[in-house]
Length: 339
Image (cartoon, rainbow, N blue to C red; front, side, top):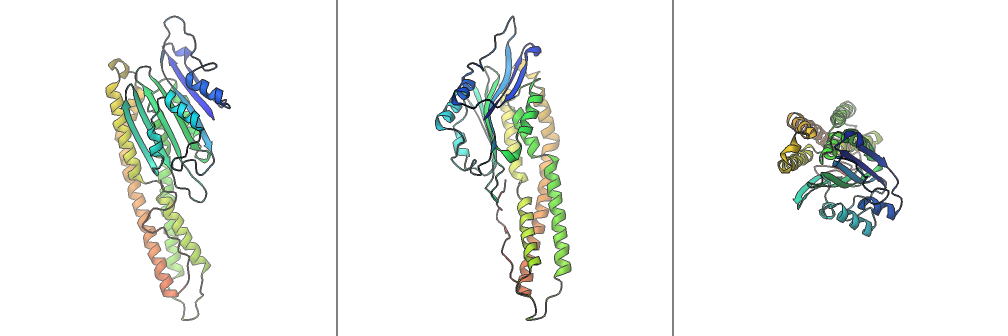
């Protein structure tokens, strides 16, 4: 377990950004929550004041595939309860643990804007790619407090490194959310979709060239290892194509935009001039995000239809040749590992 703290002061030379892994005991954990020694607020001289910041408890190296199962928490009960209470995090996180796929929830309660952003995957082949963050922004102090949990294979620390680099000039409560969205909806996702469509076209060519003629009666083999392997490859392609559903992510983006607009409407007018990250986020979302989701959805639909057609071709080959093939197609339903 580690911690991250970014504090911005009226004097920029006092700004700090620290990311450490020293919360090895419960006492250290509680000291960080309550800002006690060695995490106590620094003494400030003159007119220097704390303006804003972000303080996070991190568990980004989870390896247990059940870490994101419904009702599962990765801290001791007393520590988890203290975390929610001290950081003013929403208990709704326990309800959202049953959600599969990307999920974003927000609420303005009292003087805090509470955010929950998570992506939980069904375990597939012993692996999970889940992560979650719970954040709470105080309108009184400008501080964002939160908890982040992620599977080690997600390499979520890359997002946190970006947060440290971006967080010094402005600590915005949606900065971590936007960085995570950019990571999930990067061009890498589009490239993966294209790669799967190319793979499906290769499989289509193989099926057409290999099985255009039916074997003579009673002379065809009862099983065909190559056909069985092709069946599995098509199933895997379809599963990978459906792992990132564009519409689900578009719903997340819409909810984030609503929450960001609510935040903008409730901060003092004098603070809006320094919220550059919000302007960048809104411009990026308006110009690119919807188009990217729409384009990705079109590509995913094409690849999904291709895999369904090839699945039907495989079934026709089975009926025509009598070759026994393992039934590995996901079909019309959602495959394991969908997000």
